[in-house]
Image (tube, rainbow, N blue to C red; front, side, top):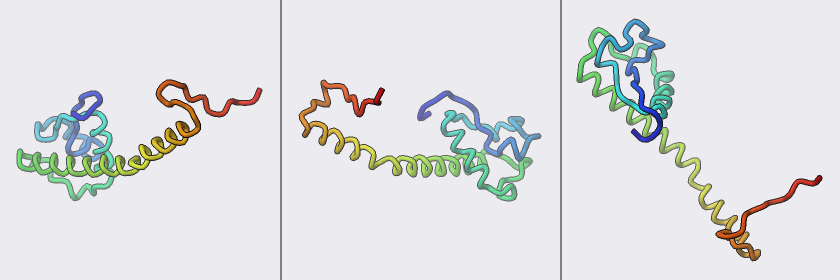
Length: 117
């Protein structure tokens, strides 16, 4: 698990297949809460007709759907990471400017502008 509390995910979402639940071991996959949440986006983007017939679940379909979920989750995590890549550079530039003004960022707290009373 990448982080967060462990949970079990329904490969075929409970919202679309409420009678299936965890009755089939092929519909369960261990996951962290964060990945389970991201996989929920995949569930909302997938048409019900794209899912396998619940009566025909087996280890092969299980592996296919776990792989599909992992690929989707990895892509969403990479997308989120890309959005924040520039933030490190922004913080570095701010600290460099602060140091250039004679402040030691390692020992002096940053107070920033003070609110007027």
